[in-house]
Image 1 (cartoon, chains in turn blue, cyan):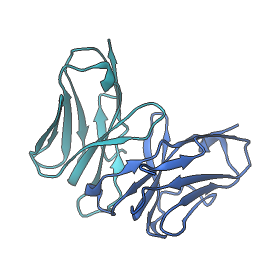
Image 2 (spheres, one colour; image 1 turned 90 degrees about the vertical axis):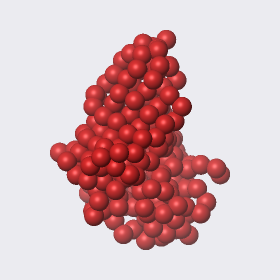
Image 3 (cartoon, chains in turn blue, cyan; image 1 turned 135 degrees about the vertical axis):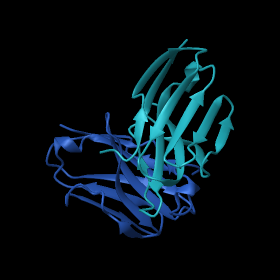
Length: 115
Length: 112
């Protein structure tokens, strides 16, 4: 597709369940980023992929969070044993390269609600 | 502590008014970017400023990068309801991580 695609767009889950969020970046974009956006908190960096490897996982808030990227394309963010504080919009962005000057194209996000 | 501080946090104005929003830091940035985000959507890149003192114009929007590359401003002339949204600045400090950090944004509402 022409843009970054994220699915699902909305997810409501019960506390303690696992969830998987998917990101399909723009074809040819080697860099992929996951951010979390909470009300009034701005965008919080989670993890960065260059190709299939993740040189920077420093933003993952706990070991319940993991992510992978396969074939240099689709990425999945998994949250295990979800907690209410995990409720947020999870945004994925892709870029031609790691330098900020390339600019990022964001998907529309997945709104996660943990009840 | 936020690396990039944006002000004001909220702005509500009438159509036709001018406004300026600010993005400030104590760190030097190699470049800064401005994004606009509408409800239910991801941020959309508006501009990248690279050179200290640089001014870029995008129709009614004027972006400026401070001489010391520590701050930036966005000025909107004759605001329109279509300008409503969350304006975010982002940058990666010089000599530091290449992962950009985002400010918390300025939420702008333009009333018809």
